Amino acid sequence: MDYPPSVQRLIFALRQLPSVGPRSAERLALHILKSDSSLAESLAISVSEARRNVRPCSRCGFYAEGPICEICSDPNRDTKTICIVEQPTDVLSFEKSGAFKGLYYVLGGSLSPLDDIGPEELNIPKLLARISDEGVQEVIIALNTDVKGETTMLYLARELHQLNIKVSRLATGISIGSSLEYADSLTLSHAIGDRKEV
Ligand SMILES: [Zn+2]
Image (tube, rainbow, N blue to C red; front, side):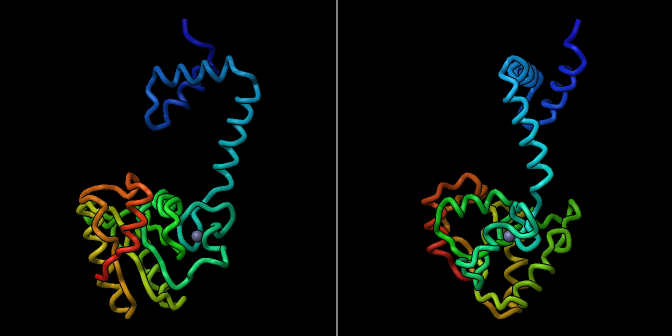
């Protein structure tokens, strides 16, 4: 004997989520079933609304509800400075630190020739065009400090120098091999405040 088919489908769907094993999927499904029906409704509505309304900002790649994200449409940001990061969640880390008032560009990964990820896949040509079109004066490269991040940083620095703009990277303080996601706000503030030209 098993659960009714609709419950089995719910358990199966929950299992597709990261870090949810069979036991937790079952626990979550049973919790939804026995809770007030408003929980199930708000879950269903918020999942489908978020999925439908949120897409990458056409300018920077951060999460946006509409064509342009809130950061890109904020008139008080410094449009002459761009911080290049790997993932949209890195933007949130900088925003939480409050140490950066410029704009961002999300690469969506790092260069990895073995996985066929080259400059085109990371939209680097589009980024370079934007930098020269918008008269950007400084680019801060804030990638993870693993091998792929460093390779990408060196590639970007070389391309950006040809545009005659200031190129800097975060100060050391983000430990080698680590992801920005785990850096606390204070570390990030120092890393961006003490950035070094490359
Ligand atoms: Zn944006």
